Length: 413
Image (cartoon, rainbow, N blue to C red; front, side, top):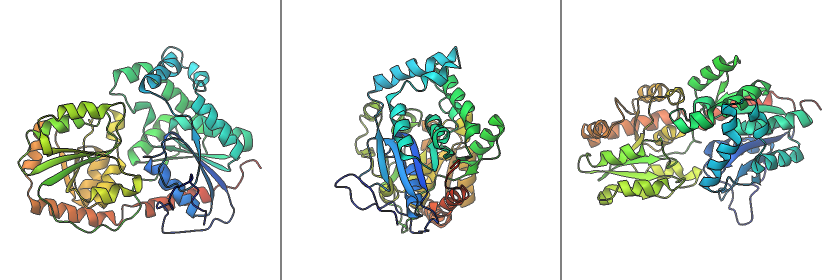
């Protein structure tokens, strides 16, 4: 088994898959993730899976890192302050709005990407998994240099990801679309998180249908817990705009007695302070809880009763959304309440584990909760646990292992 490589003081890695399969050849696999690794559960799961299968795995990502690591990590320079991030968007992405070809040159005006390319070429991987569009040109540099095979793992529908933001549409969209369009066909395989994104990528870029590896958590046995008092509604995930958190907090003022809201996740850009100001006067009806490591998300969520997710159905990207938090809620044994989005609807209705909102408004959320009682919630919680036995990474990870196993150890020798 590949040892758990970590920085000094890190504990043994808890992310290991329970199913271990030795690779015939010690193939070197790099996972490139141009974002902080600490809360990227998908990259951590994939790295642990591949390391357990006997591959020599290296992760290239930004700090902060989790305390336990499933493989060696090359740390890239971080993005810096929020003002630097905004300045970088204007400098490197906005010119493509007028001159799309500029995206190819300006992409590399980033110390983070240059450092990632340098470390990747030194590693000389046989296979590179590029996580999202930012990593794709970096991965293809290894293909040109040493014949590495490239798997493009599209976590989002990149060219539509923030299309509800006017600033993003004006400053970044054409840059993102140009980078993905120019490089995606050079990848040896494309993987994504939902059938909707797979269909959209295949249609937009005239590709074979990408492989869907759902963003499910590794299996953890969770005991059924009867609905508590108060009834806890949990939002777990990044505390950022466009997640409906302001609407959710506003709705709490209309909730029936006996319900409380818990918001847990990493905050970005001080947005949590904005939410705390919205929650003034609500007292203990709202709890802001600190983020937990990816391997503890399910066990921490099991303390709640209902998992909630809001996302406006106003963009193409939103209609394809199948976030990992839905699967995490189910494995934690929670009833699911969500915006009515096609991918989520299929999962929730098939499992009979929750309800879909007709509108993402404070009154609609409050009305949904007012129609619930502990017996109804408990029935959904039990249904979620039953379905979660099949919706976990043990099954989804096998698809990724099979894809990797089909690739020769070295593309061009």
